Each structure stands twice: as structure tokens, then as C-alpha cells.
Amino acid sequence: MAYYFPVSVADPEPFTAGAQVQYLYAAGNDLGLQTVTVTRAAKEWSGYKRQPQRATYYRGFTQFIPKVERRDLSIYGGASLELGDTSTLDPTAAEHVGRILAAPYEHLGFTEVLASKKTATLAMAGRGGRRYSENHMGTGEGRVLYMVNTLETAPPKSLIILEEPETSLHGDAQVRLAQYLVEVALRRGHQIILTTHSTAILGQLSRDSVVYLRRTPMGDVTATHGLSTYQWTLSPLSLGS
Image 1 (tube, rainbow, N blue to C red):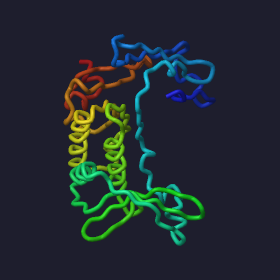
Image 2: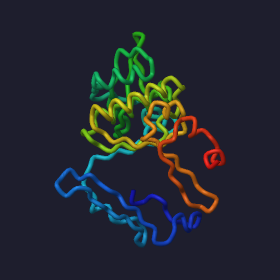
Image 3: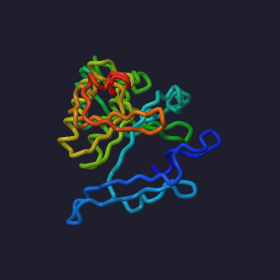
């Protein structure tokens, strides 16, 4: 967070002078809510050192970029690739991946690969009697596998931030993913914050959990709480009428 909203020649004033953000934490002690104020110092945002420690995970678009697009060693070092240690995905996580994607997996896990003294990790899957690596997975398939693995292996009561988790998933899979996010949040105590443009995902969330952010013609950002999926899809002019 300390480097969000960078200042540069391209964006000399991405926020107002003297901007600050206040966070309220339920610290889990007798002190009640703990307030942390974050302000912009000379080059970065500061004040985070006062926040209570908590396991936090951000999963955006870079969580799963097909390795062929990253010139990964598993692609361009394929001729000399060596397979190392393997691990099997937790059965609970594997069950949820299969349900979200409606795919009858026989195996899900990860394998260490080595080439030219470099190492990487490949997701592996098996179905229909055949095994394949993430180099032959669809983008949505790989994203769900890594996302679910994070949610199931993160410490209980972690903060999970997801950027448009619906990317590369068809509508039915988006619905099942949203149902899983609600279930895992309740089961493991996670706090999940996500950005989305998907009505399929929003339709599975309670109205109390939805916040619609809109920039006004004056440049301010307003937050509207409790919209239904129907209201969320309306234009800003309709919302204001």
C-alpha cells in the first residue's frame, strides 16, 4: 500500500494536497477499535507501521499470467526441464476448484521445475486419465486454482484482496466462485475485499456488502452502500433520479 498512487510526470497530482486515510481496526483486545491514520510523506504513504499485524494477501491480474506470455523457463527451457518435488492440493481446496469450474479433476497440485540453475513452480492437473501442467490450462482455470489455494492455505482470519476475480470465467463459474468466497469467508474467518464488474458475482452477495464507487463531475468519489444488482447496473444519472 505504501506505493499506491505514485507521483510522476505522467500523474503529477493523483491526490489532493494533505490527503489522508483513516483505518479502523478491531484489534481483538480490550482497547476496542484502533485508529490508524495514513498520510503522504515526501515520497510515499506512511503510518502503516502503527497498524496491528495481520496476514494479508493481494491477488490481482498478475496472480496468473500464462507462462508463455512471461517467457517463463518452463516454456523456453522446456527441452532441458527437470521435475522436482511435488505437492498435492488439499482435498478441500481441490473439491472447491472442481466445483467452481465444473470439472471432474482426478489430481490437482504443484510441481517444482528446474532449468539452467533456475527454479519455478508449475500447477498440475489430471482429468480424463491424462495429466497436464498450467502451460496447457485456460487462464480462468489457472486463476481459480491459485486463488483457491491461497484462500485455503492462508492463516485463519486473513485479509484477502481480490481484483476482478471473475476474469476469464463464464457466468455459471462466476456464480459458483462467488458462492465459494462467501463460504470460505465464513468457514475460515477471512475478510475478503474484491473489485468486480460482474453482476453474476454481485448477485451472490448480500446488499450490505456491496459498495458502489462513482466519481462525480467535480472529481470527488462518492460511495453508495446497499445497492441491489439491478440498481448497480443503472447509469449514474438513473441512480441520482
